[in-house]
Length: 218
Ligand code: SAH
Image (cartoon, rainbow, N blue to C red; front, side, top):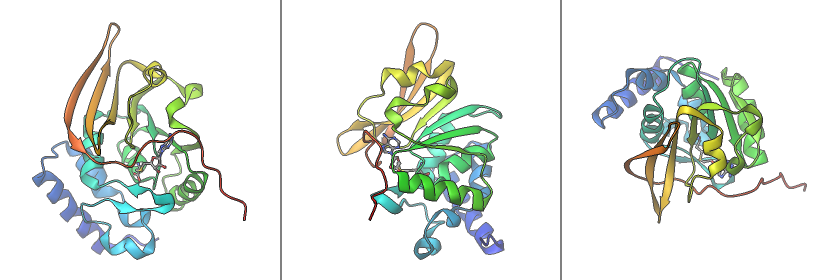
């Protein structure tokens, strides 16, 4: 697991690119500058790790584009010690960015294979604080609710009521909501009387699908 001056240099370049694209939050930028994204990709893609692009991971899924990760993280308005539920663990990169920002992160993945591989990887890289779960994100994680923030990293047709129930009052939920092929990045703010929503433009995510996918025994 090598993270040397060359990788750090590439990360600083990536951060400059994100600033040019409009990301301003210094805490988000400093987290992106810290997380070794190349260690979250399979070896074959290592050289591409600091391009602002999404990349394939196992099970036909993707590691999100850094700009998308930065945008979703900024919309969450994170402060230290927050309890954050992520739906869509994938490579574990987004979860690690949240750890760098001082969050206590819970993350759910529906593919048993990805859950196992990423849990191991997070420990190897040093982000073993992320609490990972294999399950269906449509149900959330009621056992650990309520959360200060909920982040959905797969395209969801509509946010189910049970996820809002697991959000604290004053909490924020960020999700890419289906709008055909692309999704609207939507921020939901929960108060006592209502759930306010704000839209932040179109993005493209892999779909959020129901049910757990077990490893096949072969
Ligand atoms: N946050 C990830 C991006 C992963 S892509 C990263 O930083 O790499 C979205 C992930 O959501 C995929 O791994 C996909 O398998 C997972 N997913 C899709 N539907 C889900 C569901 N119902 N519950 C949990 N995870 C789900």
